[in-house]
Length: 451
Image (cartoon, rainbow, N blue to C red):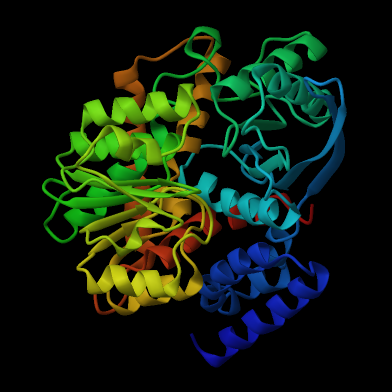
């Protein structure tokens, strides 16, 4: 980065931090993008004059609202709901809803900012948004979750629609929650539309939507490895998380010939050197999706596994690492441990799971490293395919959706290589994803004027 670009980044970030104090996750996400884009922006008078990045980093709209609901004891509880509508230059707002105690405005703004570029990379006409609440569905009954979802949607429905903003699921929002949210939306608006994605197969959902993020992450990993004449076959894979993304990343990696040796949750991780095969994964899915149990129970059932409380899996030797849990779960020390243990490829299934220090270490050692905005875009891509099917009032077969998903991930990889290949041949997937995603949004904003 030359001095002019460096000065642009520092001045831009100084203004952004002053306008958005106390939002470290948002600052981190914007800085990463700004550092990639700065050389291109300072070389383009029109991008500077029209302040394209400044406008992308300012949400078009933020909605914050109260969510009161009754628990099973008849007591009133109050949570806070959010919807950050970041950018609609290339299509209606699109992005998930997250229910987790950690949810705050900083996290949702970072996610909505990232979503803008991720959605652009898919080539589908979708803008960027994110929403959620500090509500924790863990330990709540189905009745309590339903009451909360109905109260949340009673307010949110004023601000969304199939041509305006199309939410989906995220952490804490799975098929159960999407069902409750959609039911209340349909009841209040008196319409059956494609306003929410991630719906059940019997009522407007797309085949392969639950699998899409994890599958797409593995498809992207295969494309990355192919640049070095390799594939996932025979590779040891460490996966963090045990939710939707981790489960289907484990499934697809195993189908592609890899041996997945770890899964985790907030309490710790399990290491099974024999590999988490299809039968073991079925148990994990039942444990987490039906009984909402903890990953430590895996080690009680399978003697080949050990449980490591309070730790993350990045100390286990592997060829490929797939962080699929949450943001900033992989730090610099853990990144160095992965490198020292022979890891050659890191592909993000979660949003921003690697800290800036970890990313620097991966790139310094020339690992294949893909950021979430590229590698985990399969989920929102298939949500976009669900929107298309809803608009056409038809359903494609799982094979058709999988073929389209695979093609989208291949195209995203090609874009990253086109914009991210350095003079020495190393592919900087961070720069490639940021520049590739930015260009489409920037061109649309230039065409639409100062709006």
